Length: 576
Image (cartoon, rainbow, N blue to C red; front, side, top):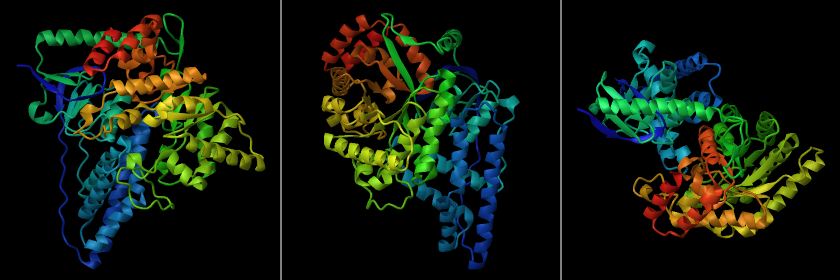
């Protein structure tokens, strides 16, 4: 008898194969008291376990294919950096000394403390780094207890669908190397590192399938629908026939999309649409160019600060930005200035006072930069210097009013003056733009557009702030809907303000990367998308098969609607 199980779709695609229920032994740490003389032995045990765990990760890294994208290797590097981070190691040593306890218990307590810190972070990407802490703690715990690494042989996994409580990035990379067909996990969300890896590796995946290991047994035939987030256990012949055809169609579609690489995005009525990519690191450009050799519409520079866990100096930042410019070989690079704040702190020497009660609305992004100009100036210097090596644009996050813009311009002039005195080259006419992600900025978009060279709509925060909700909070996340009429009005106001002022308007939030909104945005007049690399060819295909003259009147009716159900129905019709 077939059983339909629902979860969270995180990586598109269809997988059909036998289940392999992966059970990892997790030994809970047991606390016991040690004498002061034994503390040195426990610290030595911890150090040895840490070295052993790090060696395992380095060995895995060496086994990966040379063509493995840099952003995937970065997951392993992140775990290695965590293991070697003084916050991680020194905190555990301090627990051993303070509580006279064994290394396993001290490590568990330090992990719990760090997880709590990440859990309180507003930013969804950073909040999910608590998974990294869990994975690192578990790997060191396994080394402390000499637990064997017992991933199955490749012959057991090839073509199978993995069913597990959770998978570490190391597990996922190893299993992908062993040619698994897909995976299902009981925990995780769309922003977990395992989900991100699955998307980058092209493995169909569903997470959040509660009690999956109770409902599914090894050897049972499964269908994983990574688009709908459904699992069919023991499918009937009719379902198998249907999904096998869908899988064949999916393979044909991938071949079709691949043929679009290097070709322009042009609507059926000959309107050229600009498609650029989003990156976190210069290495991500290599991944983007696997899909298309295009420019960058969003370079999130705060990831450099977070990875290094400090404010990098001017030259370090300059080298990173210069590397990105050179890798683009003449394609434009839009660098967003740091979006750090009270909710995603790093260990630096600047005192920010107590944690804000509502970090998302506190001292973050440009607000923090304007309050700490001496800390911000090195980044302005670095971005300006990078502009001497190719087309660079500077984008400012979370601007709220014109007064902030005036302060920013004064700081940029100071940075330019400093570089002239140092006889360092830069683009005197470096374009400056703003992210429109606060409702107040959207309503004043025309005023901003008259003073700036471009605008970019950041839908993630714009939706969150407009609807007054935390999209990661399960209690209210159901309200997070890009098709809310208030959100659509703010997006439309911004696009029209740009057209009136004669400056380009792009969109770089998740909404731009979602193919279900592409025709809606085209009909609203958006002609510049900055999107995730793996969505680029799909978005291009939709653009190449869309006619603006027929979309515009239909979208006008959508913008006049006030009921979300009606809007959703009209958008579905638009897509068909």
